[in-house]
Length: 392
Image (cartoon, rainbow, N blue to C red; front, side, top):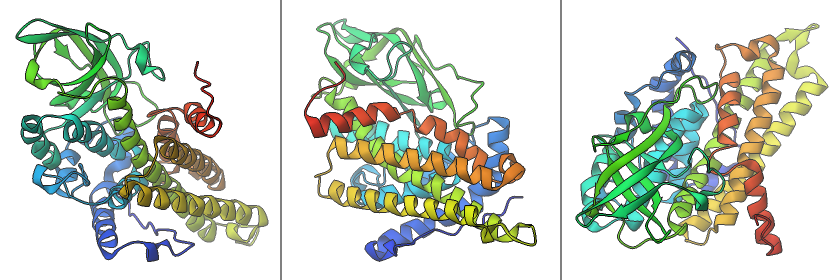
């Protein structure tokens, strides 16, 4: 069984910026990851199987909606704590962090932010505990980066809505009890609603044959004349503001999480370079290897400072979507670069399941794409600094 010997890199003593509560939360999640998840995650990834048991346990350790108020079952924590939890989970595997991100940022957040009081009371406690499992339906087979062009729609039938359409690349969907779905009404305005498993005409087939995020479950959402009760519609929110605010919350978690994957790759490469001897000395004694390690820890440290500052801004409700985009893009770019470099440092062993690096590298190919691609986030930053919209 795999032994997790991970050591958290903290070159600039950033622990001094954290509260004692933050450290307790981090140590609790890290202990769970090391004891429960790390020893088995490679086996699940090799089999392309989602460890269903993690859903309840993620709820028990407070990884679902940690910043949702306690009255609705959440942890009532700040956004730094949320980021730390995502970092610890993705340090082990991006797919498991995705599971928690979707549940907390894309399902619980919109219900808390835009749902009626009845919807909050009905769904949030079960989602927080892991008794309910959720997914988020925005991306469609023909519309990814341009959600305003979505085709999924619903019409008012008097005592219910009739929903038709399809969503694609939906994390958690085949096992989800509920789906937060964004669709256009008869006026062409985007609205959000909660669709429950078991509603006639609603199916969520699994997408298989993935080379990335193999330990998470991904699927479609298919709506064929699904009758949705009117009380399941979010009462106020209209337009893209709703789904995009959810994406900002998820992107924030990814900004922290992807750095966790980078840290794990760095830690693995550092330890391997100290243990592996070639030409009469450890690999760490060669200049090129030191150059790679020095560049890795520099980029990680810069990323740590970026997400910490972003977290402080988010705590003060001052973080802008463009600032979140910058952090998401940066963390993903840093992480995938470090994963590739670390893989080379391990030589042939870098592709072995005995080490996490190749799994991280494959996972990060998805992370750099979902919740806004690398190029889309560059254009968001470009539009923010120039005031010129390059999307049209």
